[in-house]
Length: 79
Length: 79
Length: 162
Image (tube, rainbow over all chains, first blue to last red; front, top):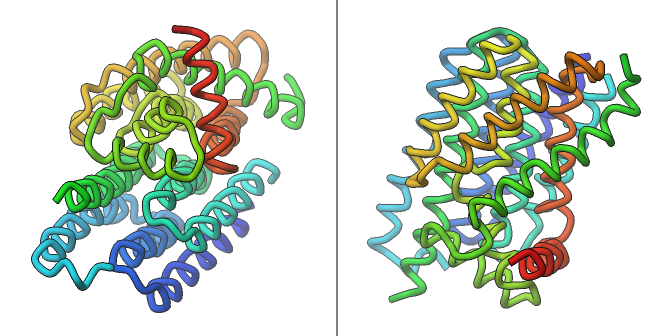
């Protein structure tokens, strides 16, 4: 029953990681990192670390917001 | 069995559409549909009362991430 | 008890009607709530979509609206019954306030969905997990298949209703 969801977590992590490497634009890299994080949260919930999953789910957008603030200083890097 | 199968198929389909879409802003609806499917998969994976907190924290976090990316692109296009 | 293969399509239609009517009631397709929703509306309109449908898709993406309320109330009800649904209603309101939204659409959507799911599971015999899958299928039709045609259909319905 839960094997299907573990397969989903593996596919999402691999897809997010490899597409983060191969995609050009900075915003697309952030979106692909979101896909990678969804796979990681599924792995954490599978083992029962529910509090760690809450922390990761809330800290992911904070990291993204700081990266976006840093990107605002050099605009030519994010084409 | 069939419930998990539908969640997994929709999540993988939306992740692939989000990775291979060209326009950055048009990736965000597919990412949102994938977040719906992953939230459902989290709840189906471990039915425990704290899992409600995990599902809502993950969903709100990913929505906040989409909001930050879209508003940053909007503020750059104005300048 | 209804068989789950029969329960999922009926529940999908019910979820689509429920969050569509609540989103139309709070006037989501009228204008963009935050600046990100306006950017998504412009991107959809440049590729052949509709203006009002683009605003509704943008508002759903950038803040937890009635669709998210429906899904999370179904999750809470599946896990813990009525106390879980109440917890999810309160947390949806807090989450909508985090995303710079007013939170009326999400909270009322979660409340209405909790009542509908309680009625249908108690008296009609629907399994509770069918509503989770039903809401995922409903949101797939709104923003997963093709944003161009979905925004055109939403805009047509909105102009006919207003």
